[in-house]
Length: 215
Length: 224
Image (cartoon, rainbow over all chains, first blue to last red; front, side):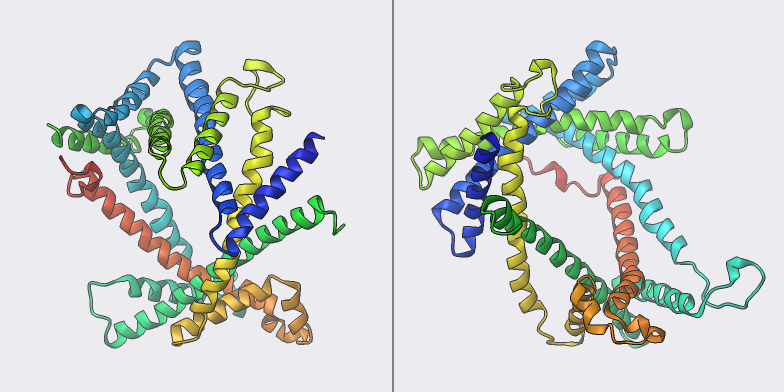
């Protein structure tokens, strides 16, 4: 019985969202309002139990990790935003978060997005058939490696705006934008596929689980 | 005072985290700060929830247009808070997890939030289709390359793509659409991704330095 009610509620809400394809209508607005309220409440409750109770309360009062009080004080300072006269104090926890994220990303991004990517792009571009397996590579691999090394280099040339894209530099930038277009095309194709599979899932819910029209 | 103190905090905390990487006893600082973030995030969510209530209750009291939907939003928010914070309908009582099997909170998530969330994202399939129509009109060389790339990836991931090119002999199997899609993903796509990632990495590094040195101050807002 309970599952049946859940199924009907789910179907009502699913159809409400899909009804937007016709036009913006009260049914869609109703489901949208439910979604906003329910999801805000869900995340509020989940964060409260996970972070305030699970990490702060248990940490401070069960384990004696009093250093966590600093986090709570910073959090309380964040609420000063509600008092217009002392609202500027809420900048302190914000500065803490921005400073910590900047310091953390400064080295992490440099390591993961720059150094590791450059390192991965340095690959064999010819195969003199030395005994060392590191220097032997098949023709297919070499072509792929050339594509990757050349594509990465020209892509970076395209992003370099301190020099005018003219002559040989402009030619490299042109190839770079083609490589980036292929990347965008591939990402777009993947996005379409993921959205389609979600849509198929919802259609299966309506026609299979709810209406029992497909097995 | 109002701007200098935040700038000093930003520099001090950021520099401390950078230095901590090079001093082994300070490595755990990252985990400690992550815990602080988690706690601060909840207070930020208090502000978000308060703002949601302020906007919708304002609409309700003023009987503004579509106030009925605001009532639904507030009711949904309040229901989740009451059920979740007081663990109403939880078979294990107050000590059990809110996501415990059979709890009312979990049922609300399963029967309301999941269908709404996944349908909302699924709806994007239609808008993506209309966007594709506009983007995929091969108006110039770059758009044509994007079109071909996306088309091969889309076809390569479906049985139809395999069916279309299954007649191609084994020696030329790279030309079969699924294999071509794999090659695009591992070759040109990887190159483009790397160029973008390196660009993002350098951008993040330069922005972090600007923030730590106090050159970039937009996050502080303006004094009123």
